[in-house]
Length: 235
Image (cartoon, rainbow, N blue to C red; front, side, top):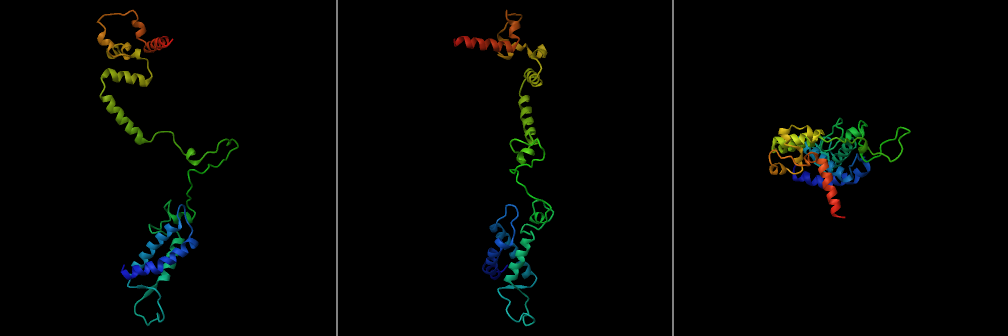
């Protein structure tokens, strides 16, 4: 585009678009007048560029004698502004004029699609639809985690389990599955009484049988004993 055409676009076409678009063009979705003026300016610039490529000249006013006395084919700035507004009214934008795109303005003008905010209230269809009204994002929400979150958690869990010993892995798997710790193999668990304090196994002598060994084999009983001891301390 030549500098002359740029000044013509700024001084002749843009004022027409600014004054006509707010009254002549319908806004679709979140569009506003300023956005449509910007789109229209770009469409008008494309029209002027195509006219120059086709050997035509855009002028302020074609003037008299355009039927044969003038050798150059000319287009007025008013025509550029008029056809730009017509394109905007039909749903065409500077980014495209698709009528099959869900978010396209032309598709919504034709009535094929309609954008609805997820904050709008969901329609009540049954007699039991009483109480607090639901919005669309509550109806369409899914409580399950997305696959990306599950994959990331699995990667973290695998790296955590890889750094544990076979005994610790067996204990964690038993707790995850909800099984009693007594079902673990004695060679792996080394006695469930050491779960509260892993150092107990190193302090106990081989073959030693403390008086309360059976009680210590129950972690829940040991926790209850500790809780009672804490209560007596505060009496």
